[in-house]
Length: 158
Image (cartoon, rainbow, N blue to C red; front, side, top):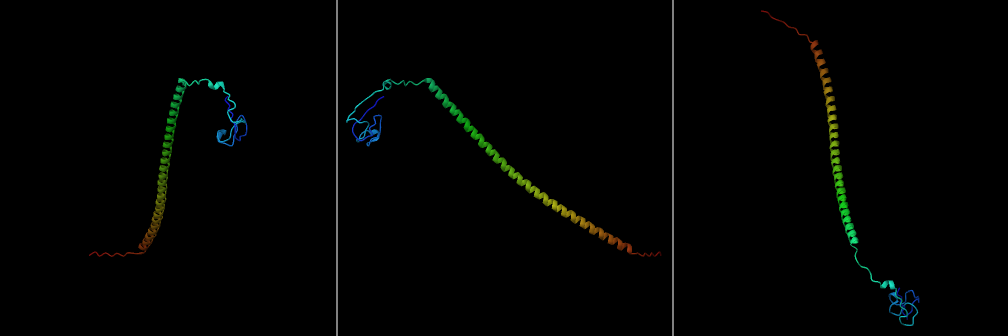
């Protein structure tokens, strides 16, 4: 551990650190750490910090990272293909719904056409029955008129 004490200035006077009236960390501008008389009072060095760092890169870590990157790429590709499949299904569903609406309109139009044709057929059936009754009545009147008429025939045989 390294600790440095600066003197002078109006700080909080804590040896472990504190903010003074000066710049950040109490350096310069009249602020500081501790209650020293104007110079560096104490320096303590942590020996663990003086040991050299082992900065070798482990090849297995690189291999694992490379495999992880490949797995992420594969998963991203799978995810993208799932998104594409989902969009295709949405498009198919939308197309099927549109086809259904068109077919429903056709069925409705056909049903309305059937109703109109049924009404025309019923009207024609009524008209035929009415005309038949009128003609039968007229035939009955003509038969009655003919039966009341007597015909006298004379023949000359000379």
